[in-house]
Image (tube, rainbow, N blue to C red; front, side):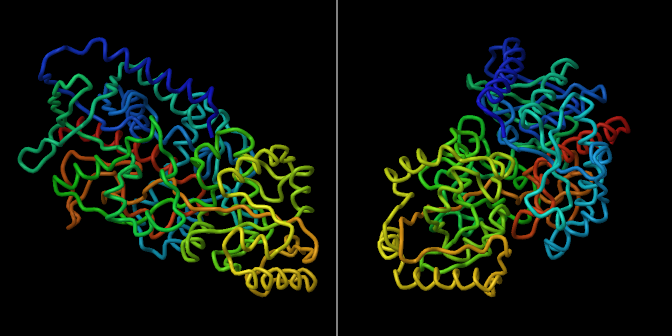
Length: 525
């Protein structure tokens, strides 16, 4: 996750590129241009495609409707890689077949195995090449126990903003052109083949761009409320954060433009209901601030996911608290349980977090056993905003959070009995996470948690070369789709077993699509 300095650095790099191209733009009402390759979208997938193109000697044109480049691609902590040089250096042995089998099983085979295989196989080259460009890693981590992890998540030193910066620098150095504040509006089609793009810039000038190949990389539709309401059944349900996960000047461009343009020329779609769910989060605080904001917010989010006691709106348990770091599972369980959770703990556990740190880490942002010294300030903020609670009795705490007191008391008695017996017969919580509460002496605390999601994961159906397909499976000539505009890679949920897949798939699909497009151009196809 990038910090403020890294974010500003990446924004400055993006502005430098857009300034270079913008200064030479003519002032005509209509501008016409012919080019080999145009890329719609300047996020991680689009920039990876442009980077691959310039490495092949082709100077692409990138159209980005926002002022800055990178989009949501600025925010990943790391990316999936399989059989990479970095893994080998650290003694990690994971095969393509292992990861593919795990992904297919997770998605109940309701995904495209041929496309997934390419993305997993080619992830090695993706990670190795960005490392060759100067991107450094700070380890390979997992949200799971290592015994059940595939160990694919390569954490970026400096965050994904460093990857974006390296791409921008290389594209600029090799003559690629990037136009920011330039919105693609429609694809141009002749004789059943895509042959260009119509766009408009910030001045209102119309751009008619004739291109041999077009790559769509607009990042999905996480910022389009109408599309979310149409496709994602729980996007406005109880306990869903508003505004949705990442909102702000660099990510509000994710409005489904590319998917809609592709559909208008006949593309099929798949998996439009699927999102990269993430939970729990503190209410009334933008989730991005709980990632990259002040310590009191990051540590508050960490405390929310600790394996103390989680109850739903009825005051009963609904999940194995030992899996609090597996944010996709938490999201899905919360969705089934009504969308809201309350994390309950007492003074002993509060003191433990402040003095010794968390039991479970919050991603790679707040690590376990690092004292959460900012928690008292978290409580001040939360009590004012209505998501942090403290009471002298269990009955009073239940009333504050709005659950039946008898249910909460019964739940806490059960939890105590499980700790005494050393086994959790309800959800199988790990023995080391079985906790007891003093039922007669407070104070008692509660944090309210809600859900959010990173990305939409549905979009256009594609071939293993990332050519767009129509609903019958036929290729739409000259049109490629990459990153979060692709559909058919996930079933109903993001696959956290393949940690870092979204950012990895964006970079890999962008590179493979660009290389295939250039090979086709050179072959006269």
